[in-house]
Image (cartoon, rainbow over all chains, first blue to last red):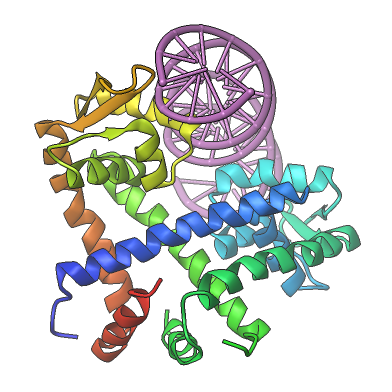
Length: 143
Length: 143
DNA sequence: TAAGATTGAAAACTCAATCTTT
DNA sequence: AAAGATTGAGTTTTCAATCTTA
């Protein structure tokens, strides 16, 4: 990569990033219309689901989901209020908490995925050919 | 496109979308560190710059930037406070306003682009080969 | 009645300060 | 002093209601 990308190329990337911001908004709107929480909650629940039956420290959730730690306490408060996860004291480090997904949390995750996936499919499929998608997947794997 | 994409493919798209959300956060952080406003302001200024010397109705800015109209009034208030744009009454429709970018606004836009572009370059270049980028550009053009 | 724009109140987010434990 | 987590205060965003004109 010695050659610098052109301004046009960079603008195309900017456009991609902008378009996907819109996509996220659309997904959140659909989820909300279906009485479901937004993608921030999904991200947290997904990470907790992945490490089952173990849990995650709160700071680990922050690292994995890329949500800021300031907001995380209150976000997890709300998820706990809805009983989608459970906070337990940490044995190894009594400063911390360990968070576990509940059965209810897993259920909510399952309800959200079809809506999430539907939007992604529509977005990418409507505009790309199968060959494009295959190619794109290869490239995305590197990002 | 008769074939349905696999769950793995959709997950890869989800990951791409998530990664770019992070990228936007990083860009906003850099802009803020440089004493510059965030990407929402950039979007507004860019659209105004594009239509020069004409202006845009506020609802048109909302359509083009995909920012919600509720927030738009107050966002534009702030941009006007900093004299980056100018609001004038609309001759054809006295309900509305027409918004024009100022010289100061153009200056701010120019200051922001290098930081914006630098992040995009770093993000894409660091992980992709030149061939990937060329290919990606072709695909992105369709989105 | 509807569209463009604004505003008030509530929710969410961000930053810094704080508390507890290491 | 530093790390994990929480909290308070200020800002921003969102939702609904409002105002003016078409």
